[in-house]
Image 1 (cartoon, one colour):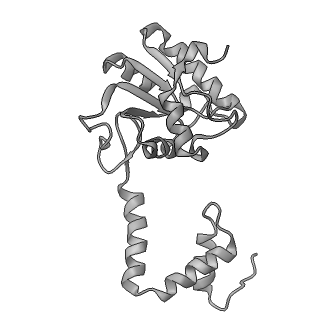
Image 2 (cartoon, rainbow, N blue to C red):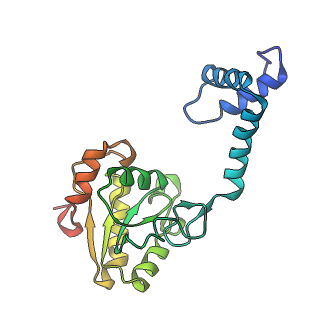
Image 3 (tube, rainbow, N blue to C red):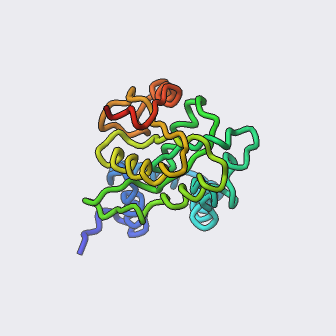
Length: 207
């Protein structure tokens, strides 16, 4: 049984909930809760309601699996985007990272992870089959592999390459300006942008 540290059980409960967030320790959680207590009741209601609405109403795009307010996200529905080029990423944060470079005008496909047997994640756990079907039906001419430059990322790249090979689609990978073992979300925008622009044929990238 945990020992209550504060004079208020309500305060204790609120701190415990904030402390569950990644990167938030109990001291930071306490600071955040005390900050909220200084705000007006309306401001706190707005904060709480926005979190509830987010959880209840957020959707995933039926095409690329990015987060969206509607069935089709605003990137996939944007007629000015290059619909013949699809960039394959691990997660939603990678879409945000690449969009921040303002160097890519194609579409995305969010896998929802990478193949990692150690973590029990196999190809069937990811949005790989939907990528293959999309490439077959939507006139995709180039698929860019923009996964983390880790062993798991490279394994996923190769698996997807094998699945797409019969379709005779150009398959490229981001240039290795990003160091081996790095994740996209931690790459600076200039390096990531150049890696996208200077992408290379996948079959030449591991020689």
